[in-house]
Length: 348
Image 1 (cartoon, rainbow, N blue to C red):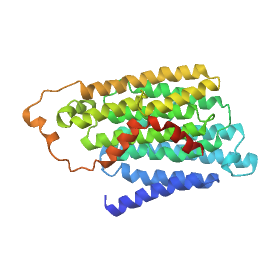
Image 2 (image 1 turned 60 degrees about the vertical axis):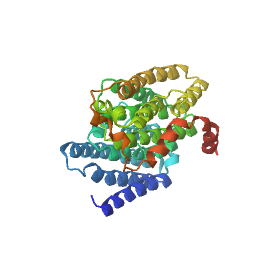
Image 3 (image 1 turned 120 degrees about the vertical axis):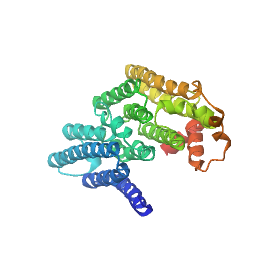
Image 4 (image 1 turned 90 degrees about the horizontal axis):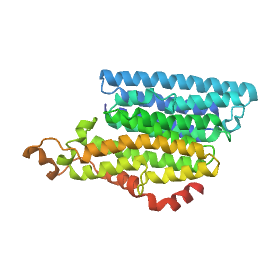
């Protein structure tokens, strides 16, 4: 793909997401979502590999279905209430349809099964866009339409946490594992959406940073399966130390950055009288923590047979750009002390 075509597609991605951000009209928000979807499809299929074409086709069909549901629900809302304003959507029928359409768009359980399959067929550079940037526009709409005390949101959140943790247990492909990780993290964000939008945005911000750092690090070493992590220690000791820290941050272990969101979300759920929901979320997080620990063990404690020539690459100067990995990894690991400042920035 030429630089001009790549720049145009990335610009269209930004325009589509920005249009959804600033829209108060349902048709404009729908148009922004469609621009983002159409812009990422050529990036998905740029390799002309059967798996990439299959992933792009699946993604197009799922997003088209979700967009049709969204348009139908917004039209139903306009027919019932007489207006197209996003924040004035209050009737239960269009609200439920809109929530399910957006859940299908971002991959919340039980509408999640497409996400790991699509992510598995993509390159890591394209996968990180789908796993992070493409979640922003639907979340911008979700933060505007959710009524208080909606049981549907809690069901989607708990189901996503368990589906993400359970689905990733037996996987060996890193992209599928990160796909199930994305589902579980989205469940945590959705759980607290109707009680604290600030916490949802904070969780989304930290999820994007940590996931971007993990994808970038795997792209640096071209690792796509667990067996490729076995030789990472001999070839790059620094990344061998960094990857488990990122994985433990995704798992939400203290004192890493990922612990911040889980602690605050559990505190908010308990304050709202949802101790049972918080307990279920903790149990689901334990499932996810298992495959993060499994990957960490594969990276640090499993050594394949090595010869002398296999131990030399770490001594050579890397020509790859490592600054994005350094910055994102530092934020993903050591942001916990800045918790008060982050909350203050999101609150005001």
